Length: 218
Length: 218
Image 1 (cartoon, one colour):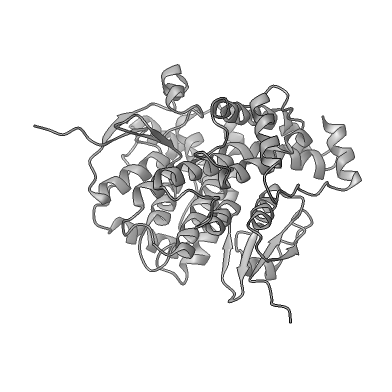
Image 2 (image 1 turned 30 degrees about the vertical axis):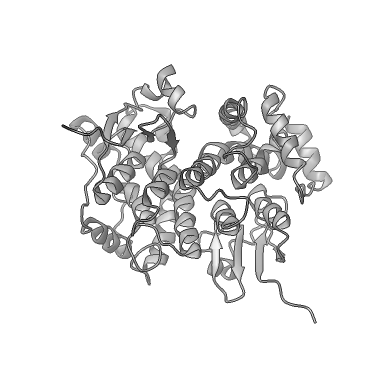
Protein backbone atom coordinates (compact mmCIF):
# COMPACT_ATOMS: atom_id res chain seq x y z
CA UNK A 1 0.00 0.00 0.00
CA UNK A 2 1.54 3.29 -1.01
CA UNK A 3 1.21 6.48 1.01
CA UNK A 4 0.43 9.75 -0.74
CA UNK A 5 3.29 12.24 -0.61
CA UNK A 6 2.69 14.83 2.09
CA UNK A 7 3.63 17.73 -0.13
CA UNK A 8 2.92 18.82 -3.71
CA UNK A 9 5.37 21.17 -5.37
CA UNK A 10 4.12 23.24 -8.32
CA UNK A 11 7.22 24.21 -10.24
CA UNK A 12 8.96 24.67 -13.57
CA UNK A 13 12.02 22.43 -13.69
CA UNK A 14 14.17 24.92 -15.63
CA UNK A 15 13.56 27.67 -13.03
CA UNK A 16 16.26 28.16 -10.41
CA UNK A 17 13.68 29.39 -7.90
CA UNK A 18 11.83 26.09 -8.30
CA UNK A 19 15.00 24.03 -8.32
CA UNK A 20 15.89 25.38 -4.85
CA UNK A 21 12.85 23.58 -3.44
CA UNK A 22 13.62 20.33 -5.25
CA UNK A 23 17.26 20.41 -4.11
CA UNK A 24 16.39 20.85 -0.44
CA UNK A 25 13.62 18.21 -0.54
CA UNK A 26 16.07 15.74 -2.14
CA UNK A 27 18.72 16.53 0.45
CA UNK A 28 16.19 16.11 3.26
CA UNK A 29 15.08 12.78 1.78
CA UNK A 30 11.46 13.98 1.86
CA UNK A 31 8.67 12.48 -0.20
CA UNK A 32 6.96 14.96 -2.51
CA UNK A 33 5.00 15.11 -5.70
CA UNK A 34 6.24 17.51 -8.41
CA UNK A 35 3.65 19.08 -10.70
CA UNK A 36 5.27 20.69 -13.70
CA UNK A 37 3.93 24.19 -14.47
CA UNK A 38 5.04 25.88 -17.68
CA UNK A 39 5.45 29.38 -16.34
CA UNK A 40 7.08 30.64 -19.56
CA UNK A 41 4.07 29.27 -21.51
CA UNK A 42 1.43 31.04 -19.39
CA UNK A 43 0.38 28.23 -17.02
CA UNK A 44 0.78 30.51 -13.98
CA UNK A 45 -1.82 32.97 -15.33
CA UNK A 46 -4.76 30.53 -15.49
CA UNK A 47 -7.71 30.97 -13.09
CA UNK A 48 -6.87 27.61 -11.54
CA UNK A 49 -3.28 28.59 -10.80
CA UNK A 50 -4.18 32.08 -9.59
CA UNK A 51 -6.53 30.48 -7.05
CA UNK A 52 -3.44 28.74 -5.67
CA UNK A 53 -1.13 31.79 -5.82
CA UNK A 54 -2.77 35.14 -6.66
CA UNK A 55 0.72 36.49 -7.45
CA UNK A 56 0.95 34.04 -10.39
CA UNK A 57 4.42 32.68 -9.68
CA UNK A 58 6.07 29.33 -9.09
CA UNK A 59 7.20 27.64 -6.93
CA UNK A 60 4.24 27.02 -4.66
CA UNK A 61 3.93 24.12 -2.23
CA UNK A 62 0.62 22.64 -1.13
CA UNK A 63 0.04 20.42 1.89
CA UNK A 64 -2.42 17.52 1.95
CA UNK A 65 -4.97 19.67 3.77
CA UNK A 66 -4.89 22.22 0.95
CA UNK A 67 -2.83 24.96 2.62
CA UNK A 68 -0.33 26.66 0.32
CA UNK A 69 2.95 28.52 0.71
CA UNK A 70 4.52 30.68 -2.01
CA UNK A 71 7.96 32.29 -2.47
CA UNK A 72 10.94 30.00 -2.92
CA UNK A 73 12.99 31.27 0.01
CA UNK A 74 10.05 31.19 2.45
CA UNK A 75 9.49 27.56 1.36
CA UNK A 76 13.18 26.78 2.03
CA UNK A 77 12.94 28.35 5.50
CA UNK A 78 9.81 26.36 6.36
CA UNK A 79 11.21 23.06 5.11
CA UNK A 80 14.54 23.60 6.87
CA UNK A 81 13.14 24.37 10.36
CA UNK A 82 14.52 21.79 12.79
CA UNK A 83 17.04 20.38 10.28
CA UNK A 84 20.80 20.97 9.92
CA UNK A 85 20.08 23.23 6.91
CA UNK A 86 18.99 26.11 9.17
CA UNK A 87 20.92 27.19 12.28
CA UNK A 88 19.01 27.33 15.57
CA UNK A 89 20.74 30.51 16.76
CA UNK A 90 18.57 33.58 16.07
CA UNK A 91 21.44 35.75 14.84
CA UNK A 92 22.63 33.07 12.42
CA UNK A 93 19.08 32.52 11.16
CA UNK A 94 18.83 36.23 10.48
CA UNK A 95 22.13 36.11 8.58
CA UNK A 96 20.70 33.29 6.43
CA UNK A 97 17.62 35.42 5.75
CA UNK A 98 19.81 38.43 4.97
CA UNK A 99 21.54 36.48 2.20
CA UNK A 100 18.21 35.17 0.96
CA UNK A 101 16.77 38.69 0.71
CA UNK A 102 20.00 39.75 -1.02
CA UNK A 103 19.42 36.90 -3.47
CA UNK A 104 15.88 37.96 -4.32
CA UNK A 105 16.59 41.71 -4.52
CA UNK A 106 20.19 42.14 -5.72
CA UNK A 107 20.99 38.87 -7.52
CA UNK A 108 17.99 37.06 -9.04
CA UNK A 109 16.50 40.12 -10.83
CA UNK A 110 19.75 40.43 -12.80
CA UNK A 111 21.32 36.97 -13.08
CA UNK A 112 18.08 34.98 -13.48
CA UNK A 113 16.48 37.56 -15.75
CA UNK A 114 19.57 37.76 -18.02
CA UNK A 115 19.35 33.96 -18.34
CA UNK A 116 15.62 34.05 -19.06
CA UNK A 117 15.95 36.71 -21.76
CA UNK A 118 18.94 34.91 -23.31
CA UNK A 119 17.25 31.52 -23.47
CA UNK A 120 13.52 32.08 -23.71
CA UNK A 121 12.95 35.22 -25.81
CA UNK A 122 13.27 35.48 -29.62
CA UNK A 123 16.48 36.83 -31.14
CA UNK A 124 14.73 40.10 -32.00
CA UNK A 125 13.09 40.64 -28.59
CA UNK A 126 13.34 44.27 -27.44
CA UNK A 127 14.09 42.88 -23.95
CA UNK A 128 17.55 41.91 -25.24
CA UNK A 129 18.52 45.59 -25.07
CA UNK A 130 18.46 45.17 -21.26
CA UNK A 131 21.15 42.47 -21.27
CA UNK A 132 24.22 44.72 -20.81
CA UNK A 133 22.68 46.46 -17.78
CA UNK A 134 21.46 43.17 -16.27
CA UNK A 135 24.88 41.58 -16.73
CA UNK A 136 26.65 44.55 -15.11
CA UNK A 137 24.35 44.37 -12.07
CA UNK A 138 24.81 40.59 -11.97
CA UNK A 139 28.57 41.09 -11.74
CA UNK A 140 28.03 43.48 -8.80
CA UNK A 141 26.11 40.73 -6.98
CA UNK A 142 28.84 38.19 -7.72
CA UNK A 143 31.47 40.59 -6.36
CA UNK A 144 29.53 40.82 -3.06
CA UNK A 145 29.38 37.02 -2.89
CA UNK A 146 33.09 36.69 -3.72
CA UNK A 147 33.95 39.19 -0.97
CA UNK A 148 32.14 37.01 1.57
CA UNK A 149 33.51 33.72 0.23
CA UNK A 150 37.09 35.00 0.38
CA UNK A 151 37.11 34.09 4.07
CA UNK A 152 34.02 31.93 4.62
CA UNK A 153 33.32 28.45 3.30
CA UNK A 154 29.51 28.86 3.40
CA UNK A 155 27.06 31.76 3.46
CA UNK A 156 25.85 31.19 7.02
CA UNK A 157 27.84 29.94 9.98
CA UNK A 158 30.00 26.85 9.68
CA UNK A 159 27.69 24.66 7.66
CA UNK A 160 26.04 24.34 4.28
CA UNK A 161 22.42 25.47 4.48
CA UNK A 162 19.48 27.22 2.86
CA UNK A 163 21.33 30.47 2.12
CA UNK A 164 23.75 28.39 0.03
CA UNK A 165 20.88 26.62 -1.73
CA UNK A 166 19.14 29.94 -2.49
CA UNK A 167 22.30 31.52 -3.92
CA UNK A 168 23.47 28.39 -5.72
CA UNK A 169 20.38 28.08 -7.92
CA UNK A 170 21.03 30.92 -10.36
CA UNK A 171 24.75 31.42 -9.69
CA UNK A 172 25.39 27.91 -11.04
CA UNK A 173 23.78 28.87 -14.36
CA UNK A 174 24.89 32.51 -14.56
CA UNK A 175 26.91 31.76 -17.69
CA UNK A 176 23.67 30.81 -19.50
CA UNK A 177 22.86 34.52 -19.36
CA UNK A 178 26.31 35.59 -20.50
CA UNK A 179 27.67 36.33 -17.01
CA UNK A 180 31.08 34.67 -16.73
CA UNK A 181 32.24 33.38 -13.36
CA UNK A 182 35.89 33.21 -14.35
CA UNK A 183 36.82 36.33 -12.33
CA UNK A 184 35.41 34.82 -9.13
CA UNK A 185 37.51 31.79 -8.13
CA UNK A 186 36.04 31.82 -4.60
CA UNK A 187 32.55 31.55 -6.10
CA UNK A 188 33.65 28.70 -8.37
CA UNK A 189 35.20 26.89 -5.35
CA UNK A 190 31.93 27.30 -3.40
CA UNK A 191 29.81 26.04 -6.34
CA UNK A 192 31.95 22.88 -6.39
CA UNK A 193 31.55 22.49 -2.63
CA UNK A 194 27.76 22.70 -2.99
CA UNK A 195 27.80 20.10 -5.78
CA UNK A 196 29.66 17.70 -3.44
CA UNK A 197 26.97 17.81 -0.72
CA UNK A 198 25.07 14.54 -0.05
CA UNK A 199 21.87 14.28 -2.06
CA UNK A 200 22.83 17.06 -4.47
CA UNK A 201 20.81 17.15 -7.70
CA UNK A 202 21.61 19.46 -10.61
CA UNK A 203 18.97 21.51 -12.39
CA UNK A 204 17.85 19.73 -15.59
CA UNK A 205 19.59 20.98 -18.74
CA UNK A 206 17.12 22.95 -20.95
CA UNK A 207 16.28 21.65 -24.43
CA UNK A 208 18.56 22.12 -27.43
CA UNK A 209 16.72 25.17 -28.76
CA UNK A 210 17.15 27.05 -25.46
CA UNK A 211 20.79 25.98 -25.25
CA UNK A 212 21.40 27.27 -28.77
CA UNK A 213 19.96 30.65 -27.73
CA UNK A 214 22.21 30.75 -24.63
CA UNK A 215 25.24 30.13 -26.87
CA UNK A 216 24.17 32.74 -29.42
CA UNK A 217 23.63 35.53 -26.85
CA UNK A 218 27.00 35.22 -25.13
CA UNK B 1 24.80 57.53 34.25
CA UNK B 2 23.45 56.79 30.81
CA UNK B 3 23.76 53.42 29.13
CA UNK B 4 24.81 53.22 25.50
CA UNK B 5 22.06 51.98 23.21
CA UNK B 6 22.56 48.31 22.38
CA UNK B 7 21.96 48.80 18.67
CA UNK B 8 22.98 51.31 16.01
CA UNK B 9 20.78 51.66 12.94
CA UNK B 10 22.34 53.10 9.79
CA UNK B 11 19.44 54.39 7.75
CA UNK B 12 17.99 57.12 5.54
CA UNK B 13 14.84 58.49 7.18
CA UNK B 14 12.98 59.01 3.90
CA UNK B 15 13.50 55.35 2.89
CA UNK B 16 10.64 52.97 3.55
CA UNK B 17 13.07 50.07 3.95
CA UNK B 18 14.80 52.00 6.74
CA UNK B 19 11.54 53.20 8.27
CA UNK B 20 10.45 49.57 8.77
CA UNK B 21 13.28 49.12 11.27
CA UNK B 22 12.52 52.36 13.10
CA UNK B 23 8.81 51.49 13.32
CA UNK B 24 9.42 48.06 14.85
CA UNK B 25 12.06 49.37 17.29
CA UNK B 26 9.65 52.09 18.43
CA UNK B 27 6.84 49.59 18.85
CA UNK B 28 9.12 47.27 20.81
CA UNK B 29 10.20 50.17 23.02
CA UNK B 30 13.85 49.32 22.30
CA UNK B 31 16.72 51.73 22.77
CA UNK B 32 18.71 52.40 19.64
CA UNK B 33 20.91 54.99 18.04
CA UNK B 34 19.98 56.17 14.53
CA UNK B 35 22.81 57.23 12.23
CA UNK B 36 21.49 59.09 9.21
CA UNK B 37 23.05 57.92 5.90
CA UNK B 38 22.26 59.88 2.74
CA UNK B 39 21.90 56.98 0.36
CA UNK B 40 20.57 59.18 -2.46
CA UNK B 41 23.66 61.42 -2.03
CA UNK B 42 26.21 58.60 -2.29
CA UNK B 43 26.95 57.93 1.39
CA UNK B 44 26.42 54.17 0.94
CA UNK B 45 29.22 53.97 -1.67
CA UNK B 46 32.06 55.21 0.59
CA UNK B 47 34.83 52.80 1.63
CA UNK B 48 33.72 53.19 5.24
CA UNK B 49 30.13 52.22 4.50
CA UNK B 50 31.09 49.39 2.16
CA UNK B 51 33.17 47.89 4.99
CA UNK B 52 29.91 47.71 6.95
CA UNK B 53 27.76 46.41 4.07
CA UNK B 54 29.60 45.37 0.88
CA UNK B 55 26.25 45.52 -0.94
CA UNK B 56 26.14 49.30 -0.31
CA UNK B 57 22.57 49.53 0.93
CA UNK B 58 20.73 50.79 4.00
CA UNK B 59 19.37 49.82 6.46
CA UNK B 60 22.12 48.06 8.36
CA UNK B 61 22.10 47.41 12.10
CA UNK B 62 25.25 47.05 14.18
CA UNK B 63 25.49 45.54 17.64
CA UNK B 64 27.79 46.83 20.36
CA UNK B 65 30.28 44.06 19.62
CA UNK B 66 30.54 45.22 16.00
CA UNK B 67 28.50 42.49 14.33
CA UNK B 68 26.27 43.74 11.50
CA UNK B 69 23.04 42.62 9.84
CA UNK B 70 21.79 43.95 6.50
CA UNK B 71 18.47 43.68 4.61
CA UNK B 72 15.43 45.35 6.14
CA UNK B 73 13.22 42.27 6.34
CA UNK B 74 15.97 40.09 7.85
CA UNK B 75 16.44 42.80 10.48
CA UNK B 76 12.69 42.80 11.22
CA UNK B 77 12.73 39.01 11.61
CA UNK B 78 15.70 39.13 13.99
CA UNK B 79 14.25 41.94 16.13
CA UNK B 80 10.81 40.28 16.28
CA UNK B 81 11.97 36.83 17.46
CA UNK B 82 10.31 36.09 20.81
CA UNK B 83 7.92 39.08 20.56
CA UNK B 84 4.22 39.27 19.59
CA UNK B 85 5.28 40.70 16.20
CA UNK B 86 6.32 37.24 14.94
CA UNK B 87 4.19 34.10 15.39
CA UNK B 88 5.85 31.11 17.07
CA UNK B 89 4.17 28.56 14.79
CA UNK B 90 6.51 27.49 11.98
CA UNK B 91 3.87 27.60 9.25
CA UNK B 92 2.75 31.10 10.27
CA UNK B 93 6.36 32.29 10.39
CA UNK B 94 6.81 30.99 6.85
CA UNK B 95 3.68 32.85 5.75
CA UNK B 96 5.13 36.05 7.23
CA UNK B 97 8.35 35.43 5.29
CA UNK B 98 6.36 34.69 2.13
CA UNK B 99 4.76 38.14 2.30
CA UNK B 100 8.13 39.72 3.07
CA UNK B 101 9.73 38.09 0.01
CA UNK B 102 6.70 39.19 -2.03
CA UNK B 103 7.33 42.72 -0.74
CA UNK B 104 10.98 42.76 -1.83
CA UNK B 105 10.44 41.07 -5.20
CA UNK B 106 6.97 42.04 -6.45
CA UNK B 107 6.17 45.28 -4.59
CA UNK B 108 9.19 47.38 -3.57
CA UNK B 109 10.94 47.29 -6.98
CA UNK B 110 7.87 48.99 -8.49
CA UNK B 111 6.18 51.05 -5.76
CA UNK B 112 9.34 52.27 -4.01
CA UNK B 113 11.23 52.84 -7.25
CA UNK B 114 8.33 54.84 -8.78
CA UNK B 115 8.41 57.02 -5.65
CA UNK B 116 12.19 57.43 -5.80
CA UNK B 117 12.17 58.41 -9.48
CA UNK B 118 9.25 60.80 -8.93
CA UNK B 119 10.80 62.57 -5.94
CA UNK B 120 14.56 62.34 -6.27
CA UNK B 121 15.42 62.54 -9.98
CA UNK B 122 15.41 65.69 -12.13
CA UNK B 123 12.38 66.45 -14.30
CA UNK B 124 14.32 65.49 -17.43
CA UNK B 125 15.74 62.20 -16.07
CA UNK B 126 15.55 59.39 -18.64
CA UNK B 127 14.48 57.12 -15.76
CA UNK B 128 11.09 58.87 -15.83
CA UNK B 129 10.26 56.91 -18.98
CA UNK B 130 10.01 53.83 -16.71
CA UNK B 131 7.22 55.32 -14.59
CA UNK B 132 4.22 53.93 -16.54
CA UNK B 133 5.60 50.39 -16.39
CA UNK B 134 6.55 50.67 -12.71
CA UNK B 135 3.11 52.04 -11.84
CA UNK B 136 1.36 49.22 -13.72
CA UNK B 137 3.39 46.58 -11.86
CA UNK B 138 2.78 48.43 -8.59
CA UNK B 139 -0.97 48.13 -9.19
CA UNK B 140 -0.54 44.39 -9.75
CA UNK B 141 1.10 44.11 -6.32
CA UNK B 142 -1.66 46.16 -4.70
CA UNK B 143 -4.28 43.89 -6.28
CA UNK B 144 -2.59 40.84 -4.71
CA UNK B 145 -2.61 42.60 -1.32
CA UNK B 146 -6.27 43.65 -1.73
CA UNK B 147 -7.24 40.06 -2.58
CA UNK B 148 -5.71 38.88 0.71
CA UNK B 149 -7.12 41.76 2.78
CA UNK B 150 -10.65 41.14 1.47
CA UNK B 151 -11.00 38.41 4.11
CA UNK B 152 -8.04 38.90 6.47
CA UNK B 153 -7.39 41.75 8.88
CA UNK B 154 -3.59 41.30 8.85
CA UNK B 155 -1.02 39.68 6.59
CA UNK B 156 -0.12 36.83 8.94
CA UNK B 157 -2.40 35.00 11.34
CA UNK B 158 -4.67 36.91 13.68
CA UNK B 159 -2.29 39.66 14.75
CA UNK B 160 -0.40 42.66 13.47
CA UNK B 161 3.23 41.76 12.86
CA UNK B 162 6.37 42.14 10.77
CA UNK B 163 4.71 41.23 7.46
CA UNK B 164 2.37 44.18 8.01
CA UNK B 165 5.30 46.46 8.87
CA UNK B 166 7.24 45.36 5.77
CA UNK B 167 4.27 45.94 3.45
CA UNK B 168 3.10 49.13 5.16
CA UNK B 169 6.34 51.04 4.58
CA UNK B 170 5.99 51.73 0.85
CA UNK B 171 2.25 51.07 0.46
CA UNK B 172 1.58 54.04 2.76
CA UNK B 173 3.49 56.33 0.39
CA UNK B 174 2.54 54.72 -2.93
CA UNK B 175 0.73 57.90 -4.00
CA UNK B 176 4.07 59.80 -3.84
CA UNK B 177 5.03 57.75 -6.91
CA UNK B 178 1.72 58.37 -8.66
CA UNK B 179 0.12 55.06 -7.65
CA UNK B 180 -3.36 55.80 -6.35
CA UNK B 181 -4.82 53.59 -3.63
CA UNK B 182 -8.41 54.71 -4.26
CA UNK B 183 -9.35 51.44 -6.01
CA UNK B 184 -8.27 49.36 -3.01
CA UNK B 185 -10.56 50.12 -0.04
CA UNK B 186 -9.36 47.00 1.80
CA UNK B 187 -5.79 48.27 1.55
CA UNK B 188 -6.82 51.72 2.82
CA UNK B 189 -8.67 50.09 5.75
CA UNK B 190 -5.56 48.05 6.61
CA UNK B 191 -3.27 51.13 6.41
CA UNK B 192 -5.54 52.86 8.92
CA UNK B 193 -5.46 49.80 11.20
CA UNK B 194 -1.64 49.85 11.10
CA UNK B 195 -1.58 53.56 11.96
CA UNK B 196 -3.70 52.83 15.04
CA UNK B 197 -1.24 50.32 16.51
CA UNK B 198 0.47 51.29 19.81
CA UNK B 199 3.80 53.01 19.28
CA UNK B 200 3.14 53.74 15.61
CA UNK B 201 5.41 56.38 14.08
CA UNK B 202 4.93 57.77 10.57
CA UNK B 203 7.80 58.15 8.11
CA UNK B 204 9.08 61.76 8.12
CA UNK B 205 7.64 63.92 5.33
CA UNK B 206 10.34 64.72 2.72
CA UNK B 207 11.40 68.31 2.15
CA UNK B 208 9.37 70.78 0.06
CA UNK B 209 11.45 70.31 -3.09
CA UNK B 210 10.86 66.54 -3.08
CA UNK B 211 7.16 67.04 -2.34
CA UNK B 212 6.86 69.45 -5.26
CA UNK B 213 8.38 66.80 -7.54
CA UNK B 214 5.91 64.18 -6.25
CA UNK B 215 3.03 66.54 -7.06
CA UNK B 216 4.40 67.36 -10.51
CA UNK B 217 4.87 63.73 -11.58
CA UNK B 218 1.36 62.55 -10.70
